[in-house]
Length: 191
Ligand code: IMP
Ligand code: MG
Image (cartoon, rainbow, N blue to C red):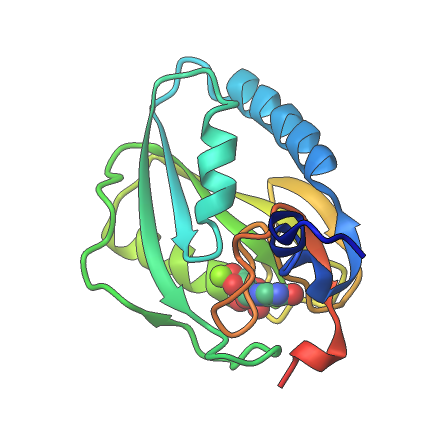
């Protein structure tokens, strides 16, 4: 037990995790690796990185700084959880205007691929309304579950077991997105 109040408050959020699955160093080095691969694959193309808010915001901020090519960024805001720890089955768009990706080689980012419903809904909508030149999927995490929709990640940071995780963009009931690591919440903080 420390008597330094600042050191204590630094850990207020981390303390709510019962385990850390992926720490900040592993996240950083894997994302740098993904950036190198994307840099190789998209050289000479017209890259647009579009992230899914809110969860994909942290991932995009770090990943684009590891991609050493000209690119544009965009976002699309959807909800599929509505506060719980299980996918609700419906994907609702929070905006009617889609990002400007006509003729671009689009890389759609998300924090995690679970049932595949979110990415399927977004790819479908982009395909119908936005005329991109190409679309690929890049996720930080992929859950080892049977998908409801046939979505495969073209780039994936880590494959994880079917467990509810928070941190690095992923939330529980709107919170924990600012944790620098990916972890599992202690039961006492799940209501
Ligand atoms: P899917 O539509 O079932 O593939 O779920 C994808 C979305 O659900 C992601 O964009 C996340 O926002 C959310 N999600 C899925 N699994 C988790 C989790 O373990 N923790 C937090 N959010 C999750
Ligand atoms: Mg999400």
